[in-house]
Image (cartoon, rainbow, N blue to C red; front, side):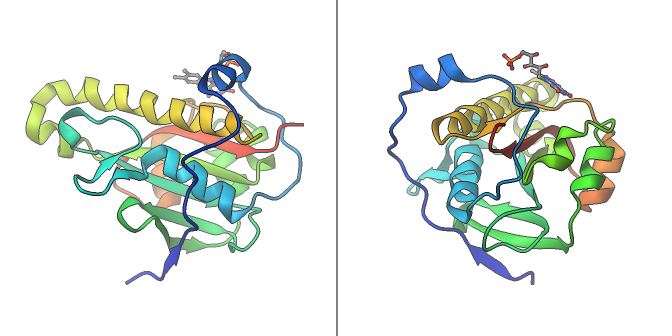
Length: 199
Ligand SMILES: Cc1cc2nc3c(=O)[nH]c(=O)nc-3n(C[C@H](O)[C@H](O)[C@H](O)COP(=O)(O)O)c2cc1C
């Protein structure tokens, strides 16, 4: 079994209001070289899919019938206290499992039509879905539900970035099969979000 890296507990209060985060949010495609902290990464992953109701297992973003089709991956390039590599986020334990060691920032950027700002960011978060979890309950309607849910998770991540002084951009232009191969996954990638300090 892959080694588990426990993440620090996320904060559930902050200094920026939701209104301010919404009004300030802008796509960021220019990042400084400053490293991210493990606290920041913990916060961002929690905003994507962290468990916010332990009794029921409900997560930070809504999900059709609580089927939770999404798996979250982290391409870590420059994070204090975390080796470069590709990691899988485990909501239940708020931890990371290593998928592959190594710096894959250039690879993920190349797989996104060479959008160069992706390789400059210290980390990139990939939202990928297992459609069957939702289609098992909702049939063909799952195609719609899963896409909607990607938006919920992506917006959570965008606003969380803004609230802690980071930037991101929703990337939808990428080669599905190349991203799947890089991450070593069978699920479908829907959104790719580089994160870091805006220049
Ligand atoms: C579904 C979707 C796909 C997107 N794909 C990309 C992308 O591949 N590359 C990129 O730089 N921006 C991408 N964007 C970001 C948009 O270009 C951006 O949101 C838009 O220009 C409005 O700017 P704002 O986010 O600053 O409000 C995407 C946005 C959405 C919603």
